[in-house]
Image 1 (tube, rainbow, N blue to C red):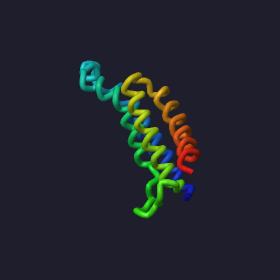
Image 2 (cartoon, rainbow, N blue to C red):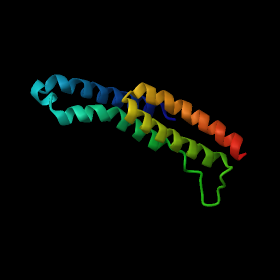
Image 3 (tube, helix red, strand yellow):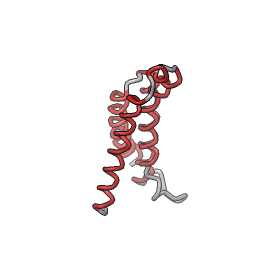
Image 4 (cartoon, helix red, strand yellow):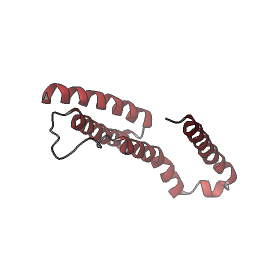
Length: 119
């Protein structure tokens, strides 16, 4: 990967982070206390996490002839299963850290299960 791309991406992420952290200081307090903004604030971490997971799904090497025993299909099934578990746990607990731990555990557990049951 090109090092200038990594540097540019790092500065872009830093800029976005700075702007999103600075905006609440510039917005009037009355607007920050609106119910719709609180609901958005509650769902934003999960939305970002789901988007990151969806963009990282590995389905590029899968074709119609790929069998269930292939590593690519097993990885995709494990990723989808882990994503569903993360969504369910976050919906119940509203704890992002717990959801992430469940997701990491689930993807590893599902991969182990798929490798040992389907193979």
